[in-house]
Image (cartoon, rainbow, N blue to C red; front, side, top):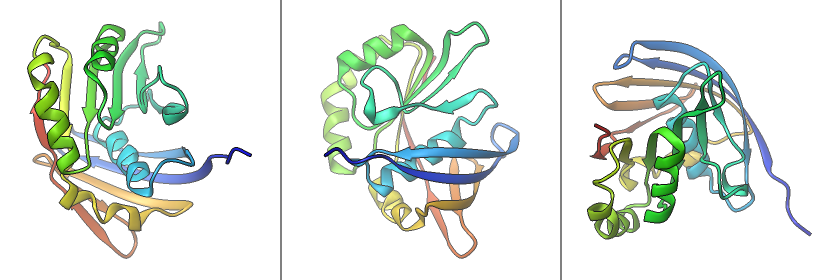
Length: 181
């Protein structure tokens, strides 16, 4: 019998000094049975990094042809495609053809480094692709913050991220590997 997704309710306050974006979002995140708490929390961090009134979480892991997050225009085109993990070069190409901007957040330490070495030569042709790595040393503690009902404060300044709860804080410094031109 297949397991159902676990639903997480998140009140996310974003203070992004880099983009001058300050807003609180009420999110419902469905955690796929095969998804880790760390990945769930990284989806929330990715949401904060790209926060916009039209940004939304998708079905994610349960569908192959959707990213983890997307922002669509009023006419239905995909403006921003946000994916976590280590997509193949084929998936990157397809994503770059579907959306105006594609942002990939690899994570996982050495595994992400190996993936990057393998694909970096083939992604230079995508002018709408940004790849920002979440270092494993920074993300290791994120899983401890995951609760079924969360109030998170995410502050972003000078490219550094602070993820805070009532009783703890985690700091993440992402590394930009490729920036869209």
